[in-house]
Length: 159
Image (cartoon, rainbow, N blue to C red; front, top):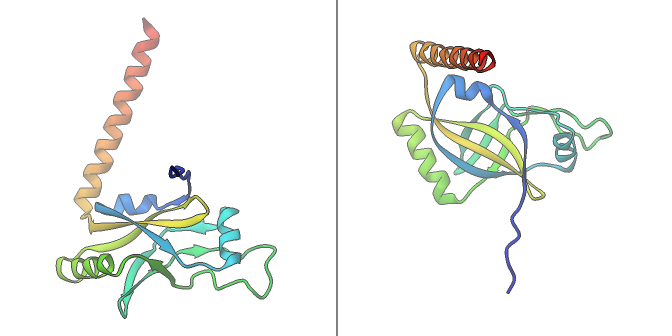
C-alpha cells in the first residue's frame, strides 16, 4: 500500500496587520500562480503581504498588493513586484466566496504565504472589518494579558 507522505509546511510570510484590522471568520487554502524568479525570491524571503487583498475578475480570483521583490540574480525574467497574482481554487469555492463578498460585505485578505511541499500556498481569510472601538478593546485585552504574565513571572521568582 502506498501511504501518503505528510507534507511539511514552512511559513514564509504572515499578514499580522490583517488580524489587527479584521475579524477572521473562515480560512481557506489557495494555490498561487507564480513565475520561477518569483518563487526564488520568495525562498529568499522577499515577500510582503501588508495591505493586500483579493479581488474577482471573470470568475477568477486574484491577490492584489502582494509585494514580491525582484530576484537578485534574475535578469529579463523578473516580473513586476506588485503585479496581480492569480489564486488557484475550485470554481465552486470561488463562486461561494464571491457571493459572500458581494452580499454580506466581507473582505478576502491573504493571511499567510507558505510552502506545502514544493508548492507555494496562500491562506486566505474571509474577514469582517473591525471598528476603532473593537481595535481598542483588543489592544486593552492584549495589554492586560501581558501585565498578568509579567506579574505572575515576578511572583514565581520570589518563592
